[in-house]
Image (cartoon, rainbow, N blue to C red; front, side):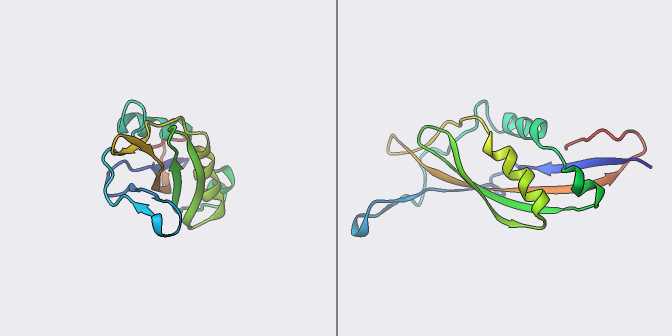
Length: 145
C-alpha cells in the first residue's frame, strides 16, 4: 500500500487565523489598536492564499519516512508595505514540520497591508498547519487538501 500525503495547511477561516495589531509608541505614548479597520489581505483573497500554500508546501521527506505527523502554529508580521517578516514558531509537534512551515511563510508574496484610520499598520498573524499521513492505494504523489 502506497502512502498518500495529506496536509491540511493554512486553514483560512477567521476562527483559525488570528490577526493582532501592534502596540506602537514609546513609554506613556503607546497606542494600541484593539480593532483593525481593515485586515491585511492576501492578493486575490483567501482562496488564492490557500491555493498558494497548497502549491508550495511539501511534506518533509524525513518526516514522511519516520511517519511524523503533527501540528505547527506559526506567526508572522505583515509590514506596512505588505511584506511578510519575522516568521516564527509558537508551538510545534516536531522540528521537521516547523522548518517546512517556516520555509513556506518566508517566501510568501506581499499582502495588501492592514490599516487603521487610513494609515497602513503592521499586523501579526497566527497560522496553524496540520501535517497528516493518509494511506492510499492509488498513487504516491503528494496531495494537499
